[in-house]
Amino acid sequence: MKMLPASGPVMGKDFFNREEEIKDLLRLLERENIVLISPRRYGKTSLMRELGRRLSERGQLCLFLDVMHIDAPEDFVIELATAAFDVTNVRKKFAKSLKGAFIRLSTLFDEIEATVAGTGIKVKFRKGLNDEIGKDNWTEKGKNIFDAIKSMSNEKPIYVVIDELSECINNMIKRKKNAKKFLQWFRSIRQQTIQDLRFVVGGSVSFDRVVRGIPGLPLINDFKRVCVECFSREDALKFIEKGFIEEEIEYREEIGVKIVECIGEPYVPFFTAIFLRMTLQEAGAHITKEIIEEAYNSKLLGAQGKGYFEHYKERLRIYYDEIMAKAAKWILKKACVDDRGIPKQLAFNLFREATGTVDEERFVDLLYDLENDFYIKFDGENIRFQSKVLRDWWRLYHV
Ligand SMILES: Nc1ncnc2c1ncn2[C@@H]1O[C@H](COP(=O)(O)OP(=O)(O)OP(=O)(O)O)[C@@H](O)[C@H]1O
Ligand SMILES: [Mg+2]
Image (cartoon, rainbow, N blue to C red; front, side, top):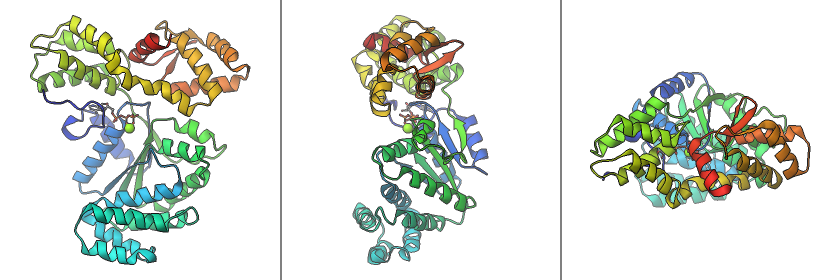
């Protein structure tokens, strides 16, 4: 069996559809910087990577950074320089432009200009930057790095794609590492470089919640917000059919329909992809609806699926303060029982009991966070789980 990719981001031939989204993004990027908004696993990273691939194909320079584990501005700046350094065909140009600003590293830059490739040089480069960039000079050094990036290509704009920026900022806030100063600096960089650089940023925790920790600052309002949606039913069916064809297993419409019914709305690309993979692994020459139902219950909702869902519970612990996490768990526990969910009033009663407060504003914030983080959605006066598959999992393991 050819291995269908199921967990990491996908690109190129594995990247399914999203043509409209890519077209829209390319049009918006003519003028604006973009923040991609979506819950986890909707396919943001894949979309960003594919966008980068297409831009590179057209001869545009595109840098890609994943800043998930960065928790200090100086490390962000080093990561940025490393992403630029990784574009090997213009590395020498980049190094040459950095030379004036990093005088202590000039012999290293001479070496870079003289060498062709090798990981040794990259290690030396990061080490050199680590020695030279610290908490007192990162704003200035960061600006120098952006200036050097601008000189890497005459084809403007140059694109800088930053994945998991909201996590990065959340990390800075948690570790008290100058998040506010970082956001102010980054905003001023965007203002100064609007002719030459275009930014696409994303993250899987809500930006709004993260920057709420730094009150009153419209530090990311200049980004055009673009929501990444799930697959439509039609796309999910086409995606499944494509998987069957690639695996040379006979496809019947009723099989596709059964798979999308198990996943349920919204058709989260990730859940669709892993469940498709599981069913294809089960499939002999003849796959039936019963086999699919069985795979759903025993595999996706069984031990194999655990790793895919656990983080939804974990993130309550990591990103919510203790008392709010407790209220969230109480609400979710009740909301998963029925697919219509529970009335908001009942949720408020649970909130009151769990937290011991009647602060309605905090309650509304909590619901808003749970909505942004993909647990619930509003449905008239009710709140209910956003996704059928997550609700099924929650009901199994948390009730
Ligand atoms: N366009 C697509 N075509 C095919 N599969 C996709 C597509 N987008 C997403 N997927 C599937 O969903 C999975 C998750 O995608 P991706 O990592 O891009 O999502 P994400 O939104 O960045 O997730 P996270 O929030 O965890 O960072 C991929 O491994 C792939 O299986
Ligand atoms: Mg991602």
